[in-house]
Length: 494
Image 1 (cartoon, rainbow, N blue to C red):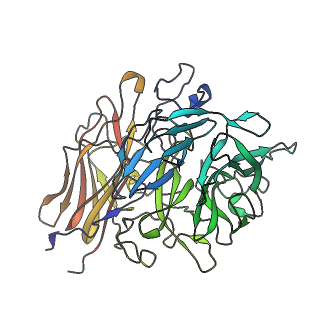
Image 2 (tube, rainbow, N blue to C red; image 1 turned 90 degrees about the vertical axis):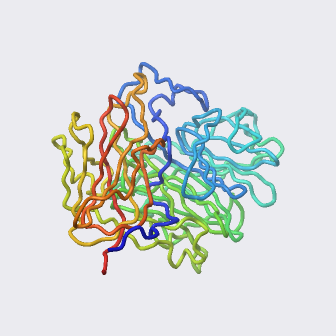
Image 3 (cartoon, helix red, strand yellow; image 1 turned 135 degrees about the vertical axis):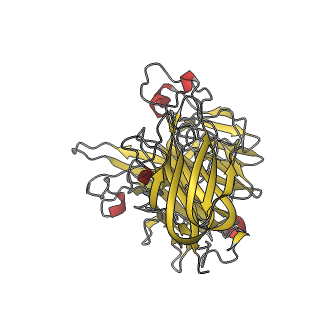
């Protein structure tokens, strides 16, 4: 029997990204805030359950590190491109869609309906510079802003915009661009220039789960990246709340403000099945060895329409200079950026989820939250054990000899209430495998101290017929559930 071999999943990551300390959802009190903020106090007028969410990622690759700036809280830093560390910034909460660029020896930051900020460090503290200023002196705050620094030192900003219409159920939205004064980047010296408008001929821009609305869909969340001299405008469409959410691309060979064309190979990111579904509003950024990577939003609206998570995937350029994802939107382990010399040809160890729709039992369950919902590969369902089951187990019969190498667990945190002190905590658990004779521990996280709502772990390859999750501890006075329990591996030929 093979056991204790080096993991087939070594040096991999898996979507959705296992971001630690996912922030509290604050959507319903953003209208009360002047700009970015750091408090966590929910106004009494705002009702509804507490939840956690993270979305709209901007990723800034700087001096060998990736800095992740999502909505709801900042920031996360990775040195190995698989593990992310939370570094709390001041201000902490950017509301939606933060964007950052270098500015000389400093860094400029702005976000949704916010003024411009500056810092000496990518992680702050950030000082407010002030409102953006049009040439006529009028001030404004951009919606979904994207800052972009060109190679020649000129600075640009792109943002969401709209124009009025009297037509029923029609909303004319677009992406516009501005050039900013490089000496005083609050000031606009050109713009707004229209980069693209919502086009119903682009099916992926039509609103609806089946792209059925032929008159309206959002085009939002702009992000510009320059690669091999070409300007690529990445944007999110058509709706952040459902599985048609995607990122698409326009490009220009002229400038950050002129000559944009819709590429034929669209959308860039789209997936309609599995726990990684939606894949909209985000960015494309350079990584190690001049590679390109897409970071995107994954809708998971169980407790709030804007409950979301984040994923990433490899991007390449085809023979026509158009961006595409050579491996699509992935749902299985992938090698970390910079590891593979030819990541476009192959960037995975070819492991699949062995627990997907497996014969699954549990020590207990709440009616309507049966164990099958932990393995149905959907992010809106979950298994939930009975409240008095203090060490619940979930067992999957793989019905064959398999070699397992890694696991992804998406926890469902229930009853969290920040005002009452019932906040998310690290979940403690053990993964066990049955080798035909006895149960053996393959992963011991019973002393886990890191809060990860989505936890991806790699362990030594182990040959087994069944696999079991045993939960040993979670937040006091809260209930726990499992949205997704995916054990990755391959069939054993021995």
